[in-house]
Image (tube, rainbow, N blue to C red; front, side, top):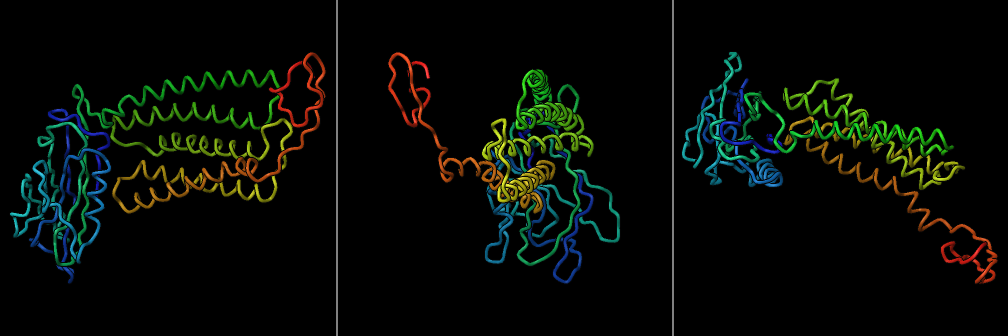
Length: 361
């Protein structure tokens, strides 16, 4: 288990970190509930310099070496804050403030344990919460925790990190800018007869305005409450998905010859390619929603992140495939002979580019 505080804490009295342990059970191979473990098992809150360092630590904890899991307690980190189950080996939690967790019997609803580590967050920066299991014997654990992490500004909880706090205002400005561009595009299109490709790009601009507007509301709600409702997520991620889909389709159709007024009909191969492009783009957007909304470190989050990387790369390749085909595979168009008339005429110039001509044609 790994939970990362995105962007970091302010530090000092402005930071709050409280973990509520609803349930925590550790059982041996026979299924018996243990009241005391031989080695430390629990949670550790540690400061990290950057995201990559936290992910490397989480990857080491998830691996098994010689039948035993690597244990955070064996690493020397004087800034570590540890909450562990009662164990017989207390010396292994070196250089860490230790908070003991009470065992919850399976048949008894024990009250929630509130572990407040706010006073230990002195320096600003990013902090990561890990779950570690130092038991050499195989066992099963089950826990249900709830983490509250936020900064306090003028007595008001602020759940967005300092780096993302201006996002609602910035996205609102982008919404106004996209709205102005969409209205201007609409007025220009009404004066001229444009192709269907221009309609698609106009829809992209309108949807970008909606995405920025609902994105401002989405991040404002995250900053004030720490979570978002399904309605806010739908209005934010829905237009955002359509923007990506229509943008990639526009690039694809340009390569298929839709840039001119008389569009070329799509062959069966390009229609199948367009269908695959739509599927991969939707998979990329859905996995991006899961990555953004879920907690980092869970297996579902890791799987969605890999799916996003693979499907995103495939969607980008399919989008530019018609352009690459026209440039490197398709035969060049036939160019007739040009007759140049006027001062400095060069006579008949086959395949002469327009910028090379002088005088009238």
